[in-house]
Amino acid sequence: MSVASDTRAALYHRVSTVDQNQHAARTELRAAARRLGLRVVLDVRETGSGANNQRPGLVKVLEAAQRGDVNAVLVWKLDRFGRSAFDLLGNIRQLEAAGVRFVAVTQGIDIRPSGDPMSRLLLTMLSAVAEFERDLVVERTRLGLANARRAGRRLGRPPLALPAAATVQQLKASGATWAGIADQLKCTVWAARMAAKKGGRKQSLGSRGKRGVRQ
Image (cartoon, rainbow, N blue to C red):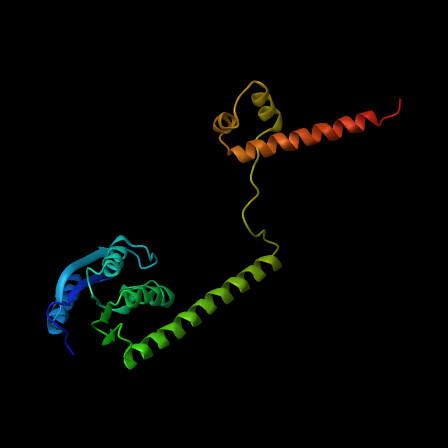
């Protein structure tokens, strides 16, 4: 079913590194827009990995939808609009919240913000897939951590290397600021302060030990 000819549409096509016929996909998008009676006001094509959901072209299309500059977005396939089912659902939800229609032209998918039964069914199915995908990632992460612990591998960030306490104390005694010390020793201000603190604690413990020695 076509819509009014004044409907403003955005075409979005992410070109993957394995695409063999990029121009055919773009031509098909424009043909679909004409067939649906849509007026193309934004045509975005970008090359890049689908692993990044913050691609400049994709962000441009979503922002145009949120501003009300377009009220329909056409893509060649679902996987061109999100790196995963979870991201795809999030992107489509943004369009839905902005009152923007989403069409994947080669897969016969047409999701309208009016909430018609077919659109609700497609979003429900996509939500289920996204939740399943997210649960798989969580489970794989949990299993990976358990295997790492069993193998005795250290988890988390490596411990921060602190500069020599004596050097920090010497620079501080000479009147240097914490920022200056950090810059000179190529470390953070926090690391410099921690080194000085630990050095002071060791000196304090050493002094108490000497006082406790009987002659």
